[in-house]
Length: 473
Image (cartoon, rainbow, N blue to C red; front, side):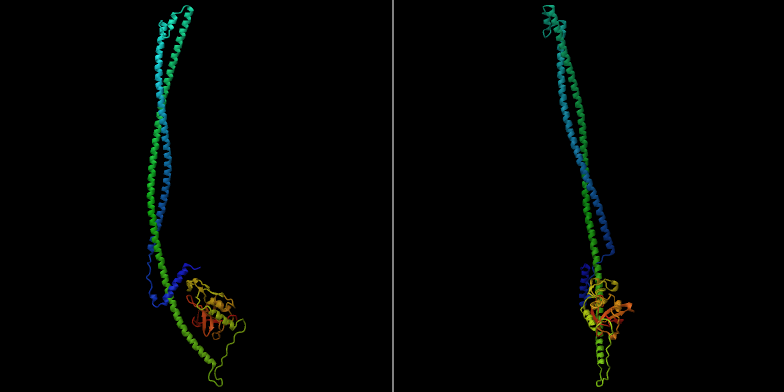
C-alpha cells in the first residue's frame, strides 16, 4: 500500500529528475522556508501548556459554581415553600383571632345583659318578699288572699301558698344569679382565648417575617453566585480563545520546522542525485571507452585466430577450450540464463530485493547506501543471478555463497561462457560483495548499485574480478 512517505519520495524523485535533466536547473534552488528556533518552539509549547492548564482550572471553577448555583436554587425553593407556609399560618391565626374576638364581644354583651336582668329581677323580688313579711301588698295579690281567708284552714292554705311562691321566687333569683356567674365566666374565658390567639398570631407573624428575611437573603446569595458564574464563564471563553491562539501558534511553528526539515532533506536528495548522475555519466564514458577497447581487442583476436600468410598454413592455430565433464550445464542453458537476465534491463536496483521468481521490494539500509530501497521494487546483484538461473538452479540470496553453490567449475577469464557468474571481492571468498552474469564479448548484465538500474556493462567496470563460476557443473 502506498504511504505518504512513498508519495513524497516520488515527488522528490521526479523533481530531482527534472533538475538533473535541465542544464543549470540545479542552481535555481528555491528560497529556504522559515525555520523557527528551538527557543520559539519551546516557548510556544510552554504557552500552550499554560493556557491549557488555565482552561482546566477555570472549567473546574465554573463547574463548582454551577453546582453551588443549583444548590442555592434548591435551598431558595425550600425557603420559599417555608415562607408560603408561614404566610398561611399567619392568615389562619388572624382568622381565628378575629373569630375569637367576635365570640368574646358577644359573650361580654350577653353577660352584661344577663347581669342587668338578674339585678333588676332580684331587686323586684326582694321588695315583694319584704312586703309579704311586713304586711304589704305584693304585686301578685298574695297579701289580698291572706286577708280574704274565711277560716283558719283556708288561711293556712293561703299561707302555705305564699311560702311556696316566695320560695319559688327565691329559687328563680338563685338560678338567675348562677346564670349570671356562668355568663361572666364565659366572658372571662373568651377574653383569655382572645389573648392567647393574639399571642399565637404575633408568633406566626414573627415566623413569617423570619421566613421572608431568609428568602430574601437566599435570593441575594443566589444572585451573587449567578453573577460570579457568568463572570467565570466569560473568563473561561477568553481563556479558551487564548489556548486556541497558543495552539495555532505552536502548530504554525511546528509546521514551519517540518517544512524546513523536509526542504533540507530534499536539497540533500538533490545533491545526492546530482552526485549519482555525475558518477553515472563518468561510468558511461568509461564504459564506452572500455567497450571500444574490448571491441578492438576482439577484432584483433579474431584476426589472430583466423591466421594470416596463406599458402601453407604458416599462421597460428586456434584450439577452443574443453568444457569440464559432469553436471547438467549446457551452452543452451547458459544462453537461456542470459536471455532471462536481459529481460530485466532497466529494472531498478533494490538492495536485498528480487529472487528466482522475479523482482521484490528491497530493504531500507542507510548504512549500506540504500536509505530508500524499501520503497523500490527490483533486484540486487545476487537477486538478479537467482532470477537468471531460477528455472534450473536454486541458490541462496548471497553472492559469497553463490560462488561455491552455483557450480564446482571456476573457469579462467579466458574461457568464460555466456551464463557464467563473475564475482568481485575485497579479499577471498568471504569478501565477495558483487556478482554479475557474463553475456559474452567481455560484457556482463548486472544490478549495479542503489539508485541505478539493471544494465549491460564491461566485465572490468566493477573493478578487479575475483573469479567465476559455471552454474550446474
